[in-house]
Amino acid sequence: MSAVDDLYRDYILDHYKRPRNFGELDPHDLDAHDHNPLCGDEMGVHIRVSDERIADLRFHGQGCAISQAAASIASEEYIGMPVREVADLDGEWLIDLLGIPISATRRKCALLNLKVMRGAITGDASWPSGSG
Amino acid sequence: MSASAATSAAPPAPLDIRGDFPVLARRIDGRPLVYLDSAATSQKPESVIAAIDDYYRHHNANIHRGVYTLAQEATEMFEGARARVAAFCGGVADTTIFTRNATEAINLVAYAWGREHIGRGDVVLITQMEHHSNIVPWQMLCQEVGAQLRYLDVGDDGALSLGQLDSELAGGRVKLCAFAHISNVLGTINPVAEMASRVRAAGAVSLVDGSQAVPQLPVDVGVIDADFYAWTGHKALGPTGIGVLHGRRELLERMRPFLGGGDMIRTVDWETSTWNDLPWKFEAGTSMVAEGVGLGAAIDYLAALGMENVRAHERELTRYALVRLGEVGGVRVIGPVGADERGGVISFEVEGIHPHDVADLINRENVCVRAGHHCAMPLMRRLGVPATARASLGPYNDRSDVDALVAALLKARDVFEIG
Image (cartoon, rainbow over all chains, first blue to last red; front, side):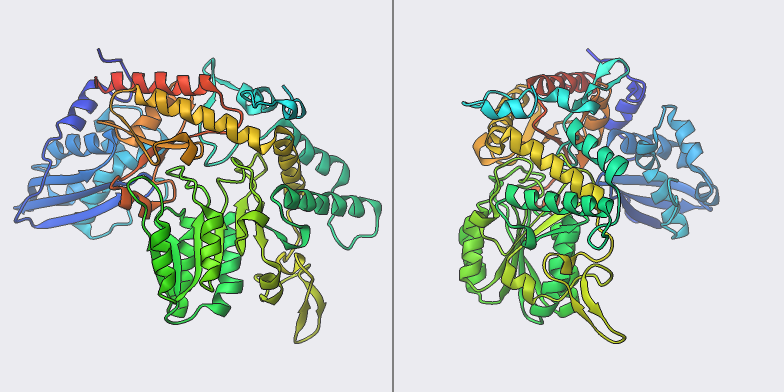
């Protein structure tokens, strides 16, 4: 029997255990890889671009339920979006999308995927600076 | 039970000292605190908090040169603490150097001894189970002087191999060998006296990182007989901001200073200076006086408990924890199997739940454990895990803390619908 939890909602656990768009994509047009040194989470993305839109993507790596579910949930939004638009997405977009209360200590987990996406598109791995 | 009452406990009964630690009375959301992160930092007994308060309230002055009463009192309190800290570890005051923490103690050796005696082609030998504080200073030294950094392997049983130590030493290039007394991840208790003896026989210098050991075991630096033994106060019931380096007198006397400034000099001229006696030669600038006084109170408290009793208490609690964790399906404990071979540090994985999620979930029950690489990223790589969860014990823990951990882990498995 499952206990009810604010953070680990059913859909979060579902995306964690059965991540969408997980794996590798070859050939691909864009890629990046990064990690969260505090907790050891790591994540990479392969992106295929067509007509300046994200035609397809796969993410891979390992990490906590929050980082993996965030990547899985966001991946379904990215596909079809203009590449430039993804590069301008901010942390609040992703946290709203997740729909769960993200504490300061879990913020880096939640944003790791967007960090890697932005890095793949812009080549700038510095986002988010500070606490994001 | 007060600390002093525990000294008569023979054979050692479980310690019952939770009431001496004010923070452990705290309740969060109406429920008690279950503190299992003592390997990161220990909680502080009332006597330590009171000693620091008393120092600032009644005795505060800068030490060593003041002639007025207050300055004399402050000096006596600080140097008295040093003498008791030294004796607590089987050392003497003038070879017991106060540093900011264990990291600074290790850096002191790397700079003041290492940069003089380690050169191109030499080897610095450390182990795969070291904390970053006992890796990075040696990496920096080796890169600077062109020496080679080599590692002793951690076996699948969480232990080092003395045979591998011998064969590394037989290569004839090892100038310094640095190793933890107790691993902060695996809990492994290393045979440090034997290792130090073999290192010396090979003509090399040894450094032991005792940060996890001093709070957990009777430590006698005279018996261990390493050239350097470093530890930190805040893991041993003392305040942050103070660490200790015990050094061999002949080496300390010949070493150049680490940091330059006030207090570490005898004379200062326009161009040159001469150095103060040990230990002050290595203590530049105004010392951490209140922290020294607080550390003195901490080791007084531990001495009154009796470190044999602390070890017996934590060994029995570790044994209990290993049994109870074994009852939780999907929990895999990392490190030595038996409580006799390990300190009160238990790293574990829960199948299907990332350590970060484990720590977050059991925090809802106020159970405080650490999740991550525990400042030992090379060891994580050796173990083939990205991170672990780690429960670590202090003398104030008891079976109820372990029971709370187990209950919280079962709930965490429920949330993840495991089992």
